[in-house]
Image (cartoon, rainbow, N blue to C red):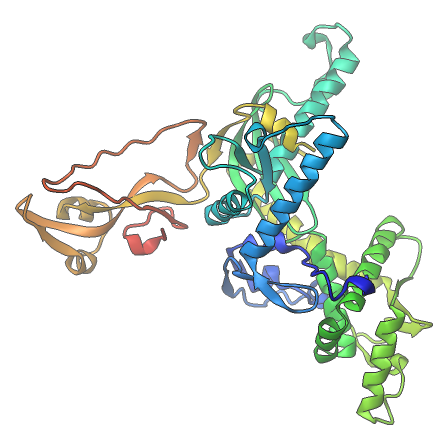
Length: 472
């Protein structure tokens, strides 16, 4: 990598730039190893903060670039590699763009706005044409995993029945039965996506609860380790290393990722688990320590030995470019992720709609070949349009007298007063929408009006009253 550091830019986990939500610091705080269940305060406040779609992305060296530039470049590379594969491996020549349908999987926690950006960037990259219907499908990752599980169960059932009638096969061998409910966890590098489905037929499910989850992928454990390095060597030094030696910083994280896998496979065998620190990183630290001119701080070992974790000392050691972590630190870093998933799933299972759930349990290509697999969905938001109501209808919709007075207008055509900026609900949050369902709402065109502009509005509220309760 050193030979490429001035030629290439490394963007890691840039897909998370499209994640936006209203988060609780208590549940989502990044990079704090002391947030595990064992040490975390039970009374810490849950402050909300808004996470918006990032307009720029930071490369490994700290330089920032537009998100559109990174995603469009990635799509162009993917298209190039796909065409090479079809030519070399599948012996398919003269493939045109319009001959290819692209299926892009996204986390279930992504918003409609994020999916729209993904579509626009795919078009900008030349991946698809907006003139070709369904050339691009954007589907939820847990839906793909759910479909793949059903394919695997069908194949297992076929291999076990060998011509027997379905009634002769045990329920466990037959797989899911109609009416069965399950919670599927799709935990990857960046996110944990969770779906709650009910079987309605072979290769057909309905959503019981809207897809949910959070930024609780395995990379969050890497963030915990990065925070630990800052606690040991200071945030200023780690930021300086990332800026001046981005390849060395990336190697630090990659070394931890390998150690992380070793710990996961052997977590009951040792008390200490090691992470190798790159030689260049150790040299960088030695130079920074020397510049301090502190008699009590002359070696890397001095920094490591004085570091406390969750108030405890003697949990870290350093020798021969190897950082050794006590098993309690490793468990705390993993718990920082796992505890959040357990809490979220527990909350889902406590919902009355999931009382029939029996199971806690690969496949984008399957999704493209299986029509209408998800036969009904649960809306995560309320959708509607901007409308003007009569005063009577506005009152019935829950608007206060003050809200009505602030938005009252006189419309000459109707010779009467109306209340503008009302939220006309077309689909309500937590309601069920079946596949291909069409919701109609008729609007009257006023004389002399040649064109009408209608904005679709969404809201996190179940019963929004005014346009200000949502966003376009």
